Length: 224
Image 1 (tube, helix red, strand yellow):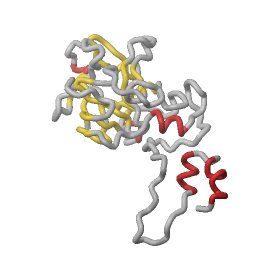
Image 2 (cartoon, rainbow, N blue to C red):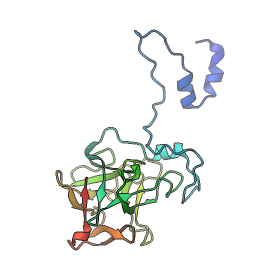
Image 3 (cartoon, rainbow, N blue to C red):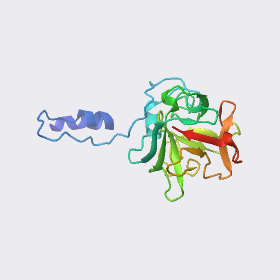
Image 4 (cartoon, rainbow, N blue to C red):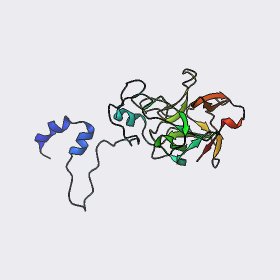
């Protein structure tokens, strides 16, 4: 590399620098490895500037990808499945209903349609899941955000999607507000967050809300 190029390269962003590095046309030689590994993107494919409902008012795709990367190391008990209420409605998210990072998205209950916003993964081993507590993460296939119960929020806004690990920028480790009691092999379950073991997620006027666990059939959800 010519030394005259060094000042220009130092002025580039990490992504631009990785793309600017010389490559080889010789297929027998290894491809160059980017100096700065990129985090996996989520799957919403929304453009920068797309209006969102909460903080920031417009989507920042780079911030959303950083806050909600897909965990490629995870063990998934279920992948890209519907989660249905006892009344046959699907847990549904709108990727534009949160903030600029695609956090704080409420979970609606709608007729099952096959929409990407109705696809969920259930993770039983993951970088943001504490091991040995009998819990699982419920992760949106559309945004890679985790289902989260936060009792500190307003009563009608406690069940949301949030960055797995509990930090808005995606750097959190694990939080029991996102860990739900789970028995491997079962496809019917109550969604009981481990930070409130007597609380169950329940249908509440077209969205997910909470109630004291009672064993009622209305508190049971079906995976698949």
